[in-house]
Length: 397
Image (cartoon, rainbow, N blue to C red):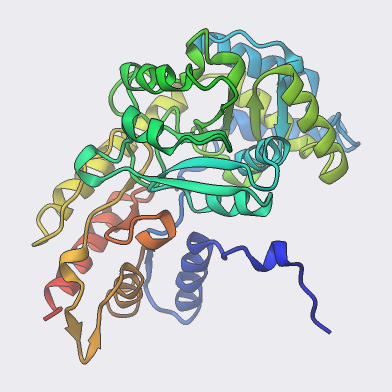
C-alpha cells in the first residue's frame, strides 16, 4: 500500500535534475546531446585540493566528524569571511553541511513554521519554493522583470510584506538570471527591512566568485542587517567541487545553534575527506578561482553574442553566475511538423528532441517566458549549441 506523506507529495521534482536525466538518457542511446541544463563547472578540481583529499585518506580521517564541521574548516570559513567580505564571525556562528543546498534547507527548517511567509524574488532557483513548502510555509513570489534586469525594487518588497512575513530569500549573483545586486540596491532593500525587524534574510551567495562586474556585495555587510542575515555559501562553484558536497552557513549564534541541533538529528557532519579538501580550497592558492571566473566571462560573452543573433529572442547580459536566461516567448504558438510550442517546457523538449541541446524551462524558475542556458561548458560546445538553437528556432513556423 502506497502512503506517501502529504508533505512530500506536495513537492515538485527538480526540473534541472529532470532535464539533466533526459539528456543522459539520450546520450546513453548514442545521441550527441549538448547538455546546458546543469549548473556545474566543467573544470576539474584543482590539484592542491585533490592532494588534500588524498592526504586526508592517508591520515585516516575516516571517523565521525563534529556535527558543525572540523575546527580547522570552521576557522578557514571565518577567515574567508573576514578576508573577502569584511565580516566578523566566530566559529560558533558557522555550520558546515553537505552542500549549500543542505545549508539552505537547514536554515529554512529552523526559521519557518507552518503559515509563515517567505518572500522569494522570481526568477528563483528551483528548490527555494519547494524547501519553503516542505516546512509548510507560504512562498510569496515577487516578479523581478526582464526589463528590470531581474532585480526587485524596494517598493515591490514593501508591498509584499505582511504580518506573517518571516524571511526574504535573496540570491546574488542569481541563479538563473545572472543578475547581481549592487551595494546601493542592497542598502535600499535593507532600508525597507529596517522597518520590519522581525524579518530575517537568507542570502544565497554560492556564486560569489563568479562575478563579472567587480567585488561581491552582501546585505550582511550593513551593521543593522548582520544579525538578521544568514549567509549561505560553499565550495562547489568557485572551486569546481560540486561532488564534494561542502556548503556552509554563517549567521547569528542562536540560529547556528539550532542548525547544529537539526543537523545532529538529520545527517550529522559532512564527509571528513571533503572537509579537509575544503580547508585546502579556502586557505590555499586562490588563482584557480580567478582563472575559472575569467573563462566563465569569456563564455558568457560568446553565448550572449550568439543568442542575440537569434531572431526575436531577448537576452539580459548577466553580471554573474554562469547562466543566461533569454526571453523566448516570441516563439510560443509556432509549430514544427504539427507540434505546437505553447510553453518554455514545450520549447525545451523540442530543442532536446530536434536540436539535441538540453536547457531548463523558465516555468521551473517562476518565469515562463524564458529558458535557462548554462554556459559552464567548453567554448566549442557552446558555439555548436547556439548554432543548433538558432537553426531549430528558425525552423518553427
